[in-house]
Amino acid sequence: MKELQEEVDAYISQFKEGYFSPLAMLARMTEELGELAREINHYYGEKPKKSTESEKAVDEELGDLLFVLICLANSLNIDLEKAHDYVMNKFNTRDKDRWTRKNQENME
Image (cartoon, rainbow, N blue to C red; front, side, top):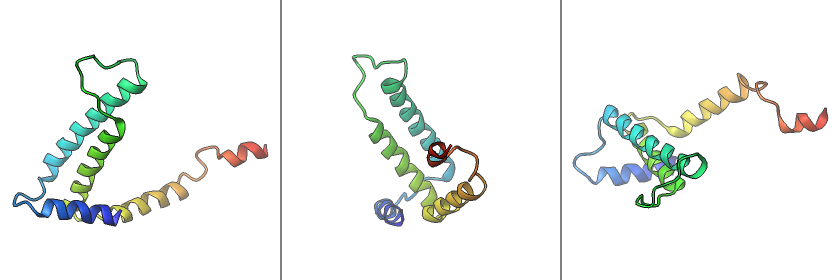
């Protein structure tokens, strides 16, 4: 994750404008999430694409969303790896018994 954050920072740092404000990036993230939702709906939902709509892929939209997320984290000096580790620790402690584990089903 650190390498991704460094790569995005190197890209953004070459422009005088730098990172957009956190609020602008949140708006952009919302836009990208909407585009991802649209693609998911086309592929897995009840709304097929019109013949006039361009073909985009879910992975492309996820990539766009990831880029903006990394930009937001970088602009706020947030280490996404540490944020990830914190969340995983939370899930592995607080929520450790919340879901039925696959290996438990086989034991019953």
